[in-house]
Length: 279
Image 1 (cartoon, rainbow, N blue to C red):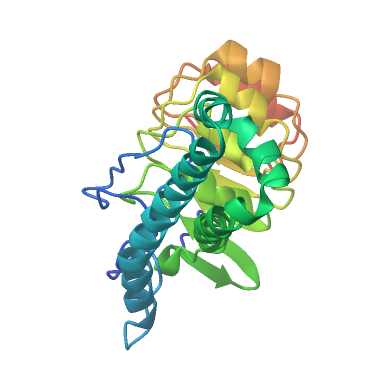
Image 2: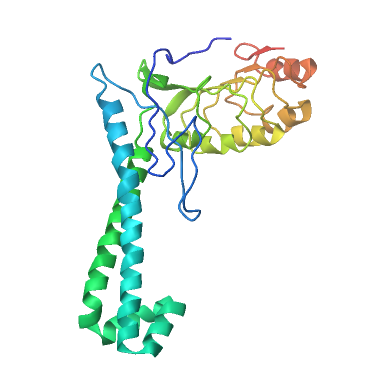
């Protein structure tokens, strides 16, 4: 079977753009705050001067400090506001301390006393929000570097052998035509990232952990023509149910799977001139 591979040689510095502490170590990130989502990022493409890598390092260096600073300022502003409330009346103070929403009516009735803390709170919130927003924007527009290429006008992505485990970067690659992701950590859940890829024609899932449930997801890809499933746990029943009648599918690698040779021969017989399989 033929296969197109986007070049994935050469070195590129990991795009460690996550603005949290401790810093990214060996591809693992610890969250400081459970309510704030964290995503690991893919590798950045660097030019001959290493500009992208330097920018990534600068963002990583300063973003964590800015984020923590914004949160600290916000908390300090709330404490300051509560102290002001105690000075006005204990009832206000205890209300604000044990029921934070009470800070709002206090600020309305005692604007002069609340103006300083409110300005500090606004600055802290804006700082924190802006840092998170910039991080999300950068993650959404990351380059996969040498793992992404345009071949004859078509998007090719090769994630086989990469050192990340977050495939959410694919959500922003809806126009990809050839996708190589033959990694042991690819599961049925990973395939959900492919939803909406209307142009995906060739997909390499050799030696992944997908099952029959994943085949149901693949059945929804309208242009899928070449599929590699070697060494996966898919079954004959799963293939028959999800892919046997898929008109666009023309080539399949089913070596070391439970898909029966007879089933594949019957599938090929429906379009002898174009369909091919390996078993």
